Amino acid sequence: MKPWLSRLVGRFESNYWLIPALCVAAAIGLSFGSQALDARLSHDEPAWYLFRGGPEGARSVLSAVVSSMLTLAGLVFSVTILVLQLASNQFSPRVLRTFLKDHPSQLALGIFVGTFVYALLGLRIVRGTSEGIERHVPSLSVWLAVVLSVLSVGAFIYYIHHVAQSIRAVVILTRIGEETRGTLEQMYPESLGEDAEEAGEERPTGMPSLLIPSPRSPGVLVAVDPERLMSCAREARVTLALVPMMGDFVPHGGTLFEVWGDAARLDVSRLLGALSFGAERTLQQDTAFGFRQLVDIAERALSPGINDPTTAVQAIDQLHDLLRRMVRRRFPSAARRDETGALRVICPRPDWDSYVRLALDEVRRYGEGSIQITRRLRFLLEDLLRVAPALRRGELERQLELLEASVERSFATSREAALAMRASPQGHGPA
Image (cartoon, rainbow, N blue to C red; front, side, top):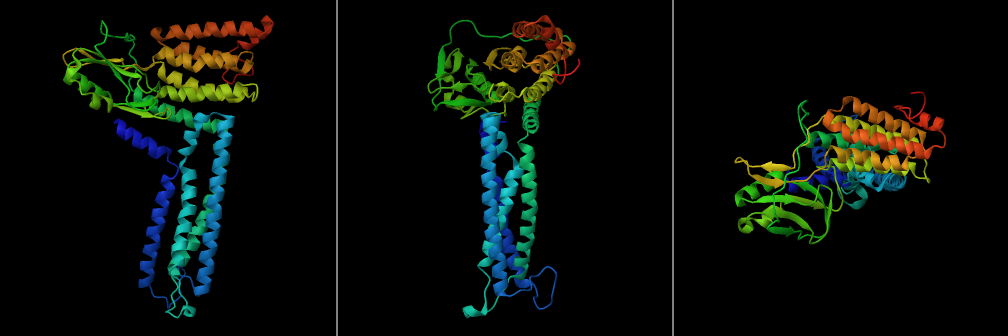
């Protein structure tokens, strides 16, 4: 995905007001459409879809809908802010982006605001004889306002149920896991062959001829267009090395690229357009950010103030699934060559060992002394070792040794240590 398109998608996904704004636009269109249809309908004969009251009755119904919808919209907004605060304190500030992308909450707010706007627009065309002009009651429009208010009541009940479910730890962790799996499938689509070898890091010899600094304000690298980088390097006949990794913070003036070769023909402005920066990390191209969120939640759950190892085990469940999916995936080489075989672009990215260390090092450290955590981590490592090819086993075996050493330090007797090292998928009970 192009960086500008990636930025646009990210803004739309995290924009809480997008769906409500579309609902308001739909309500305005429905209001004008129903009013136009009202003018064509015959109001002399009774019909189930027409409001049969007079002007005062129509005003009373529409006024009640306006006031009730405004109250419901304010209630939804207040509950959403409360949920965001609770999720930030209980789990991690990094999960707020997931809540802001919650479409059911946005749709519920949009229905309430849209119904409010629809009823408000309907009020302006209700006329009675006391005004000295022709009496007019938009019967269809008033009836539709009643229908929308009933729909809003149903949306409110669903919203309360949805919010109660969405703040559960397992729901939050599953949602993060699903988003990370989507990014994983995009970034690592190919399976690893039986005879494959890890690609070594390639770099040109000698010092770079040019260092390109960041001209922007400080930000996090969130997206890269490798095709544009390749095009720029091929046209200038140079070798480019991207310095920051996806998700790294780049200060103003920080080095973005190292260039080898004659950089006089290099289009720097076009090159910089291949990168996209943001205030925080996203999951668009940054698979490691999903791991980071899960690890943060596990650490928060294992902190003395919360002391909830079961939630940490649920976070490890998601990490286990992600690592198992990656253990036999091909990690693309950081180096890219053109059709002549010349090295043109180097884009650093995490390797298998980096993902394993990210997933396990901090959780193992914070979970020292917890039987649930040590058992669950041992089960994870033993399961991965059963399916990992030879080139991926080294870091897993090292992690198993570190876990055994941690257990020996944390438990006073050998019997306790032996119990803690029994692998268990739930972290408790018999192995």
